[in-house]
Image 1 (cartoon, rainbow, N blue to C red):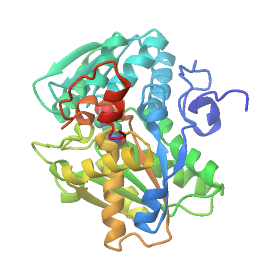
Image 2: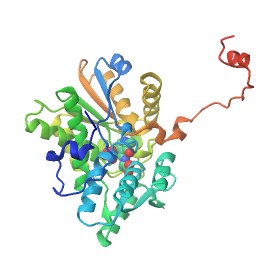
Image 3: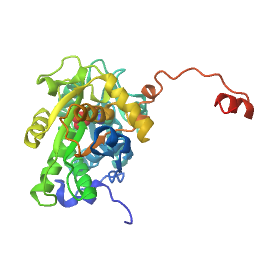
Image 4: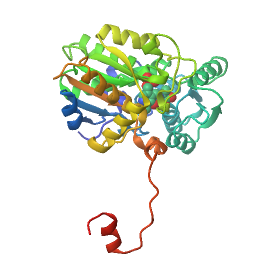
Length: 351
Ligand code: F0G
């Protein structure tokens, strides 16, 4: 194919956007669906990773942001605002810059990974660090957008989910069917809602014969959907999903119930183990939140909730470079080496 045009142009007839909207794109989407050999052996399933860190700003948010920024421009908006645990703000800042809009981002102070903050800075966003969590930031962003001429580009903006559902289309297009099971990390719950919409639309139009079971994993300290009630003070090392009151609560519950899926919680230890396994055994470096889907896959395969032989897609939502601090946790101090081949051989225990 000559050149992938980005998700809006690739699926133009399936995305609700004004027909004459100028599309602001970084040619997001068309991300790899990578067979995970080690995970397949461990689980007895056929496991594939939808590697969303391969998007232009390093997360799945770009799929929704191309649509949201294009829609904002079409309505004459000059400025956008969002609350974020980091990835939405990075994506909003990039697409706003490309579309000639200004952007403002509200982030929980001290709780956003370094790479994401760097992206918002690089793209020229107005960055407001709030003394509160993501849920507080979202409330502030909603109020600001309701009272001032700025467009809210969180996933409560309908264009966002329209763009994000294209990931389900891509999975089906690659496999020629839907998987049996789709595993996702869940925070604000927009993504699981969007995937379910995409799978349902393809099935309704006969593009695929069936829909997958939607399986969502939250961090144990931030698992409102698992407990069935909001969490006042969410806490997890996976800062991207440190959310206590998901905006798309209803969409996530519908995805689970209509698909015969499930929600479960995974501990930070399980998330970190999956994070290291993905990087160390599969060669796929993701951020901690992304590893929640794989941590959950391992648990549900081990206890039989996920039948052996299933075709399973796990979305790994963001790139590992987003969060260098977590990658470097526990790295030992090492002595510098002299410029000496013998020293290298000795250090590597080859001599
Ligand atoms: N994984 C990553 C890397 C994320 O950044 C997010 C959400 C999720 C998973 C969860 O997706 O919210 O659709 O259920 N990040 C948002 C943000 C909240 O502000 O970047 P969700």
